[in-house]
Each structure stands twice: as C-alpha cells, then as structure tokens.
Image (tube, rainbow over all chains, first blue to last red; front, side, top):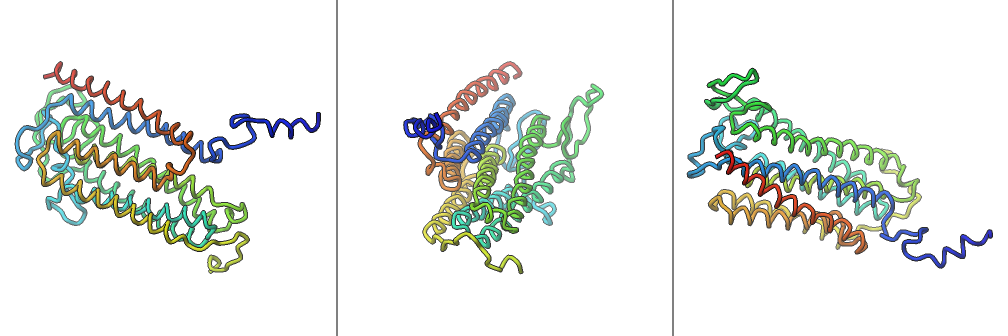
Length: 256
Length: 109
C-alpha cells in the first residue's frame, strides 16, 4: 500500500485535496474571507447610519441657511468645515478631502510594494512600505485632529433643549460632542460618528502595525530567505480594504 | 547602509514599466472621481439625483480598488464569485433597514 498516495494523487479531482483549487495560498484565501466578514461589519454600520438618518427629519431650506439643532439631521458639509491652523475659516469638507487623498496615495504605494515583492526587489519593497506607513500614520494624525475638533466643538456652540444624564430636561448652550449630546444634531449623529470613524481608525491602526512588521521583516531579509514576498501581498489586501471602507465612509458620512 | 548591499539570494527582476504605469493610472482615476464628487457636492442641489450620482461614483471607485489594487479580477473565477456573491445579502440588509428607518420616522413624526 505504500504507493497508494501517489496513485490516488493522479486520480484526484479539483477538490480531492493536494492542490489549490482556488489557485491561491491558504493565507491569501483566509485574508479574503476575513475581509468579506469585515465588509459585512462595516456595511452593517453604514446601513444602520442610513436607517437612523432617515428616521429623523432633514433640514428644510437652502444649505447656507443651515443652523444646528437636535430637531433634524445636520448637513455634513456644514459641520465638517474646519481645517487645522485656519481657525474660524469656513472650508467645507476640505480637511476630509485631504485625508481621502492621503489614504488613496498610501494605497498606491502599497500596491507598488506588492509589485516590487513580485519581482523579489527588497530595496523597492522596503521603500514603498515606508511610504505606505507614513501615509497611514499621517491619516491617523489627521483623524486625531478631526476627533479632537469634533469633541471640543465650535466657539459659539448651539442652544439646545435636551434630556441630560440625570433625566432632567435642560436648556443650555452645548459645546462639542459626546455620546449623550452634541451641538451638531441629534445624539445618534455623534454616536455614529464615533463608532464608524472610530472602528475605521482602529482598523487603520492595526494596519499600520502590520505594515511595520512587514516593513521590518522585509528590511532584515526574512522574506528573501523565505523565498517569496507573499506576506506583503496579504497585508496589502488588508490595507486596500481599509482604503475601500474609507471610500464608503467618505460618501455616506461626509457627502450625502 | 546594510540595505544597499545586494547579497540577494533571489533573482531580482527588472521593474515592470507597464504594470507600474497602470497602477498610477488607476490612482489618477480614483483621485479624479473624488475631485468630481467634491465639486458636485458644492455645485449641485442636494437631493436624490445627487445622492444617486455619489453612490454610483463610490461603487466605481470600489470596483477599481478591488479589481486593480486587490487584483481580485486576476484570481480564479471560483474565488472571485465566492467573494462577490455573498455581498448580495447586503442588498437585502439595505432594503430592510431603509424600510425600518422610514417606518420609525412615520411613528415619531
């Protein structure tokens, strides 16, 4: 019976084992299926945003007359209009546009690193991984500023009537945002902002850690000794996914 | 300077000019689409038409990222569809929750 294995091997079908029916390695397949499950998580978040949004009235009237109130859902371009170092300047969506640009560029340098990996070019891999990491860290810093501004709020704040944490109805000027009340609109507006961009930022943070690991391992020659740069490809898939999610967050949270 | 020593055991292939050019072309398309979205946000009236355009352009961007950057179109057909087909469930989630949201609106206001 010692030769059975070899004999069966030749008769095995596509799904009989001993080969790669999907023509991709185990690691790459699992990364794809993990990303599929992650797509569901983010989609659930964004669709929930849509559902909660349509359950509130929209602001009636021209955009430039918009004033914040917890009676209706805010117009995002009137809320996200601040840029670092330009205090008090109304620059709608400019900062988030810059963030989108940074993330797309880091996705480009990532795909260049993957291309270099296919050619076994260590120097190019290390160079592009470094650029990608830089893009990721810059994006995270931008998001930190964005959050800080969102939490601290504008100079004027908004006069609001709401139920505070002690269950009392109060009328006062609200500054910034927390999970309970925010000066921009109904409470779920800030809650969803924190959850959706926070969960995305968490993914970017993990991504930067993975990028650093891959960068380090490529630089010291671990992949060269291993004989292939597939790890760069797998981490690349994850990084592009982070970019993919941002494309949707940008549209659904900032544009629509 | 250790990075510059070429003590490679693997054969380093020359840069694939065509592939790299295609990557930059995809990047340009993504950036142009984003700029168009940005421009439309301030020139068009807010409403269903604008939102439909935004969602359409977003799907185009998503397709470029998945097909060109993640190389999904180069994978085997089975892998391609085992990723794409489950996404149909999301259409259902979208329809179900949109109705739910609209109903809550009717109930509240």
